[in-house]
Amino acid sequence: MLYENYGASPEEQAYNEATEAIINSDFMTLSDLALRYRVDTGANKNLYAAKAVEILSAWAGISSWSTNPASILSWQDYWPSLLHAALLLEGAPSYTSGIRDSLRAKTGSMAADLLHPNGIPNAPTTAINNWSSVGVNAKFAVSSFLADRGMFEEAVYRWRQVFDTSVVSNFLGVDGELHDNVQWTEVYREGGGQGDGSYGLLYCNYDFSAYGVALQESATPLVKWK
Image (cartoon, rainbow, N blue to C red; front, side, top):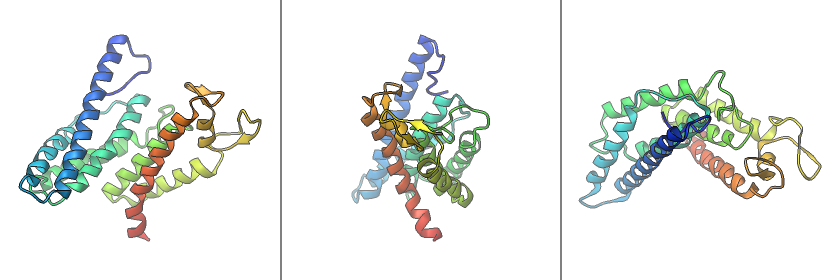
């Protein structure tokens, strides 16, 4: 299930793109409704929540994940927004303990299957390109939602690894200098690979946007656990 563009036939790709469009629409609508519930003080407040919970419950009930690397990327990219919405819905009559428990169970399943992908090449949690930012963000979001201190520490370690250490071994930039972190590889993007930097701004925006969200994800547990 979900976006698998690696080796997909034209028919499969069309299905995958249509599926991702549904997911994007559902998750954006869910986030909008949850925010409306949180800030609204009028008569529609609980109506917003009820509709949001309807969407959330449907996704919390999915039966399986795809372990294609691109699919893992999509799940890790989208799932945090569902968790944000769930936090906004706390206190809503329609967001029952049963729905909360179901979401926690499904999120725990995601953590086991997709945040520790053994033997899966270029998964976001082990990637040395812009995908790494999605993996870090997902780990912060999931660990915060599940109050999993061990996973949170893994996210912190991965953050430091990507920024501070040589996860990209002796990457030679077009400036002729050696660089040692993921961000430099994005600066020199040309299309889908390395080169003249003509796509650098696009990829850096994607990369650092996710890291900015990851900082927000980490703020609450950092303050709480300090």
